[in-house]
Amino acid sequence: MTINGWLQIAVYSIALLLITKPLGVYVLRVYDGSLKWLGPVERVLYRAAGVDPEEDQHWTRYAASMLIFSAASMLLTYLVLRVQHILPFNPQGMGAVPDRQAFETSASFTTNTNWQSYSGETTMSYFSQMTQLAFHNFVSAATGVALAIALARGVARRSAGRIGNFWVDLVRGTLYLFIPLSTLLALLFVQQGVIQNFAHYVTVTTVEGVKQVLAMGPVASQEAIKQLGTNGGGFFNANSAHPFENPTPWTNFWQMFAIFMIPAALTYTYGRMVKNQKHGWTIWGAMFVLFIAGTATAYWAEARGNPIHAARGVDLVTTETNPGGNMEGKEVRFGIANSALFATITTDASCGAVNAWHDSFTPIGGLVPLVNMQLGEVIFGGVGAGLYGIIVMIILTVFIAGLMVGRTPEYLGKKIQAREVQMAMLFVLVFAGAILLTSGLSVVHPDGLKGLNNSGPHGLSEILYAFTSATANNGSAFGGLTGSTYYYNTLLGITMLVGRFAMHVPMLALAGFLAEKRSVPDTAGTFPVTTPLFAALLIGVILIVGALTFFPALALGPIVEHLLMQGGRLF
Amino acid sequence: MKDLIYVTVTVGFFAVMLLYVRACARLGERAASEESSS
Image (cartoon, rainbow over all chains, first blue to last red; front, side, top):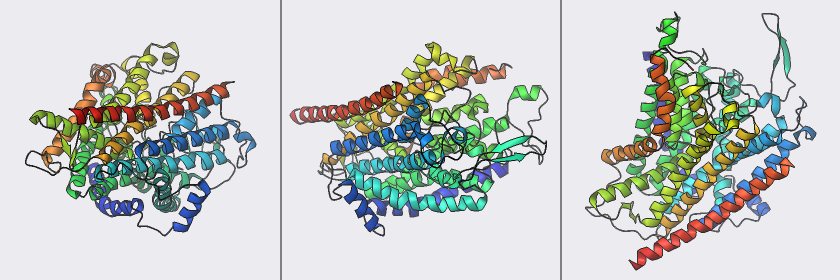
């Protein structure tokens, strides 16, 4: 590890702290309706869709609206991918996307996962990229924030039973938040050299005299929302490691910053909504502690390198001319610190963009992204998903704290009773069940094992990572697993749907149940939710729930691989 | 043929999710009535 590396991590952290309040205030104004400069556009959209923007929906209606919108947009994307060969903006003459990949891709982008079992530059037409994949990049992100705001309303409102209007939240999030911010970011990317065109692919002669085809396309516009919406699906197969997607350290910084800026701001928005700003900052602090712990672990593991490389004469010592450590699978222009930081951020959030190959990280370096996702991506998390995930964890925390002192738990003036805890537990169990059952099936099913490129614990990590990434709607690939088969395309697609919607429903139910409750005054026995003790307990609950659930699988995968690596064995 | 299967799986999944909404609502109502009667 170097001072330079830590300085870059420090600059990133300070920038994140500074953006939290101003953007949090802006997000609050987006969803409380006080921003109106796009009012005419809003009204046209509501009228065209036959939506009454004044309707305040019960949680069941809010959930049904979200499900119907997601189903319709997923089916449309499936259709377009299957017939893209007869649609315009296809200068390379891409054929129809195969049925299994069309299903997985439409599920993947609808659920904000953006797992890709294809190479964008050899599979998707510009039309598919721009009208379907980019569309989902915006609306799946706006859906995530809408649901987090709905849950915040549930906590904030008293005896209301209503949590807002899904259609209004979706439209306002897209119009006022994601489109303006991604436009600004896309311009910055273009200025830095990210390409943006509709040109035919270019054939060039390399310095070795070899002919090479360079893929083109409208990359910058896709790249901006890919990061801001914590989507992560790259225009190119190499994702943010590709020089046309992420050409400079400056674009790399903005890509990482774009992932966390809205999730961090939402903690401030939440504090304002529930009229307890200190609680919002306490959540921010708990998230930040976990973020730094993950970053430090990944950076340490990658900077330390692989002892087997050292035994074979590779110089692992960092000097002015040698990055040292484990540079396998990393871009020289980013180095170890920015690769470890990117990997941590992208899996703390549900982004899934990568600027290095996680499969080539050391076992402990690869463990960090895996654990980040298995903790439920609540460390700032996906846009919206991070906030509602951590609110569920807070419900469990105050419940456990209540059990400790033998009184009915309360959270921000609401009594937490059986049905709230049932919904919180359903949320946690669906997540764990989807990952472990599908991973378990794949390590015994012949079609599951056929996709492996590595044996032993590394092979287990590849399978576990794939289903963790799918369920958590992250979408980053560990690499090393051939996912483009009927087995993996279908099972991963279904897992993504379960990991998104089967968790959204109990979370919205929780919002509805909380919204119906009367407020109870704080007493001397109320567990305070603004103290370092609360933050520590929250971190403890997140780690214990994650560790108890996934530790056995992790022990058989990356942990045993790390121990065997120390003994000189690779897989 | 496989297109039909994938479309059916998709529609079926979301139909199950709508039933899941009802199931969660009923679970909540039952828990609330148990709480108020205890």
